[in-house]
Image (cartoon, rainbow, N blue to C red; front, side, top):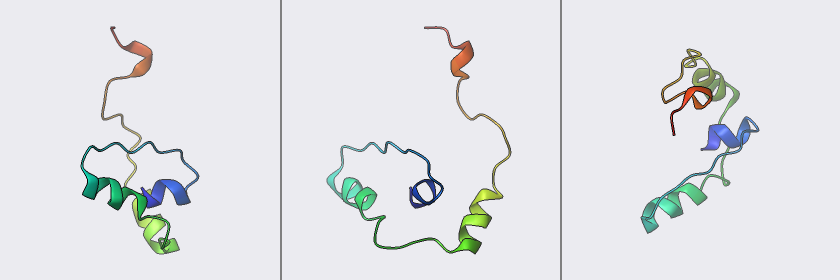
Length: 58
């Protein structure tokens, strides 16, 4: 979640577990280093991991 926020992405986390909700909120008291951001960025393989919304049968 922190990577998304720092990267300017809109993220909609979801949980029904109070401890996870609290964990999702606690991302504003730290920042990832430039090195951490670059390391996470390098994981991108330009592949989809879910259904393509342009070709989804409802």
